Length: 457
Image (cartoon, rainbow, N blue to C red; front, side, top):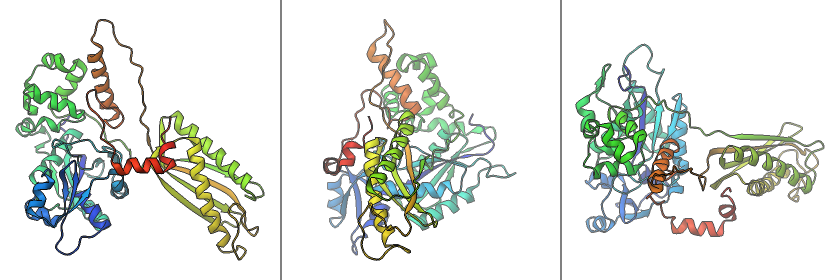
């Protein structure tokens, strides 16, 4: 439970992340500030606006009345994937396990203000304390400085004995720093000691700090008049069960008391699948090349599809007899596990590699047709790797309803349980609708064949 001697879980939250990414993409002109907007409201702000007291959640019209020269940038989830992955890679190099709350670049769950929540991840600090008791604050500060130096992103940390306590500390730090310029590596440890968390502080926290529960649970608790964890803890479990079902009520009661033992999963970096195909005599013609790549795509498709996985990046490498190696990769707009789509991507990468191969060292001078590399050093092996592998959403569940019970109530309870286990991105609780796709996303889906065929079935 929450009474661990050391706070071994860190909750990393990227404060000012979206504005930082946009400023790196296109630095503003002198004296002109930037704001990232979503749904007519301000999601994130440049440091200059924060220093002037502007806070996220403000209406765009009100912001422009105060600062007419502000440049407004629309929130586009896919733009932030690469920067967030870089942050996660830096964390994974320092700690034993990293567990992002949501895959990078995917539509983020809404926070209390209705805007996308900040990008967040759990870090496992277990075994990094040595013989001392208490958290290693120096590690968080050093990690925060490194991330700031490499990416420009300010990451702050909350530390606690459980995920709920660490997350509550991180969110409380954000709340206290609201409207101020982000500080890299700033850390807040959940109050308490070896005997457990500070009960008064825990009881005063809002129900929105409950974890891991779908966002609709906190809204239902508030409708029942329960606004703090202390009020949830004082309510009898039988009364909670009347509204949420017994299984969820028991979990709510344990969460209100400090959270459950739930270790940080090693979810980053994502796993990868690899296929190696060796070709006696080398890749001499397009027919051989196409056959080899289709075989590799078929193997990857079956391995990922059988486990409910899909990849967001494909890497292809050619090797020659002399040891020469050329490789190329492509990031995919959607998680892909379709054999035909993988083969299409691999053929495109092969065209690029063969052009580089015939112009490289040891190759015959002059242009050569793609698919017909120079005979001086033919590629004799193809390495295919599916990277950035993640769970792919499934479309339908077969639920066995119990006779005599309300189907709507049972479906709600089942979906709540599934969203607790797999996350809201894969299973959305009843009554909640997914985020609307942006106009840019719809246009890309129309014009890019990978987006229309990449959705695995």
